[in-house]
Image 1 (cartoon, rainbow, N blue to C red):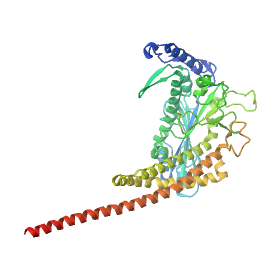
Image 2: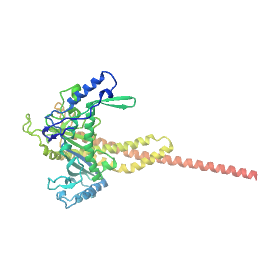
Image 3: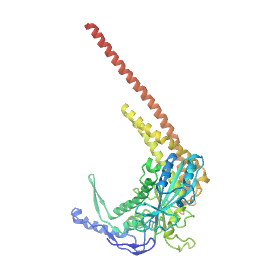
Length: 487
């Protein structure tokens, strides 16, 4: 393995790494395909490795946790455990606990609250207000903010600044040569080539970092996403930078050349369904299109350069300032997380609906009704409350768009069709409203169905009991009659 000496914006020296190459003669059956796969691996490794002047960076990520109703105490206890209190400089002069109490005890939303920031204990403090924290080894710093858009909802946004080595983790995976691997899948044998292996390793690296940040938030603050739904990866945004390629733009390549290219492996090689905002010049973002990527993580990408030759009035941000740019996305991350929250409640109620529909035998029905009743008592109130408040929030155009970027489609030919291709915030708002209506319509139906089935089963059980009692009485009468005859 070679050492790599780089910064986020400039490659000083790159040494290609290598997985142990296979012995193709032992791996593959005899025949001409041995030379073919050896050639294909070499070709795919060459095409999928970024140029020496390129540098793929991931300077920071954002994740969002939510707290529904009484769950906000998890935020309070987490802040206390981290050493944050109302008098702490980390609270930036604001009364954190008074803010939480206001959200809990009144009908008003709390707006934004800057909680503070902290750095990893084993590094020197670079920011005056930072406090030492036990952060995962991937991160140097975390910035914490809270937002209450509705009286019963509080969102926590954590912006994690990655260490230089971790920030270049995707670049390392792309520069690691990989080779053919055979996998048994039942009776079939899958031929996993170098490109497919790189795609998988990139996916694992992306998931690992997002899940590392999510796990720290879940362990520090007992929130609704992690505690009630068990999400390993919280909703958020992953920031990517390049030095040569304009990310999230249509590739001019086609066929295998495109399939093997590093931008395709990163799923940032297309304009379709990518978004941009005038508030973030040069940046675009979208959901990764690979089915195996983290479903709740969007990607924001930008090419790093001090001045764009085509747009000299729009300089790109310096790598060290990217985490400040992330603050622009705070409002959007909250709205993205709100949409994800409704998806979780929708899934829970949908599972209850399916459970009620699947009951066949009476014993099975009793078990299902008992489980459904237990789940419904814990989900129903929160789901209805959240759906009602988020529907009102998303329906209020001014409140929904306030303090958030307005992403529009990045495709030039689509920008003229505003009705057909609305801004992303409008799409999210419509999604929130539609899902809220579905939840508010389904929840009482499930409750009524549960009551009806419970009543029917109770009557059925009572009739069965009466039949048993009648049978026992008849047997006793017969026995008594027999006894009288004998005597």
